[in-house]
Image 1: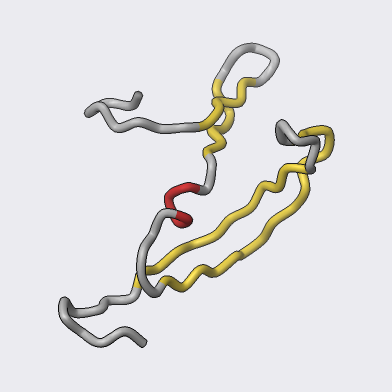
Image 2 (image 1 turned 90 degrees about the vertical axis):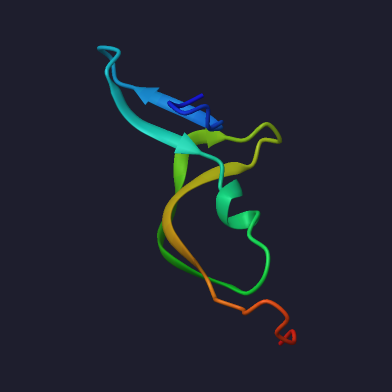
Length: 77
């Protein structure tokens, strides 16, 4: 949990001294968006030596999601 009680799923990556160097989260925020969404993937790469629970390679990347405004009651595209 983070301050304010918001649930965050992911893993904190530590260096050899125990200092936090990164936080990895699942991509569920963009995947849970309803309606028209534009996703731009800036970069992604397979992380050497890291696999998911099924043995598939894990990717690290940078992306941005933008939900398009649809007025209430508007016809679907």
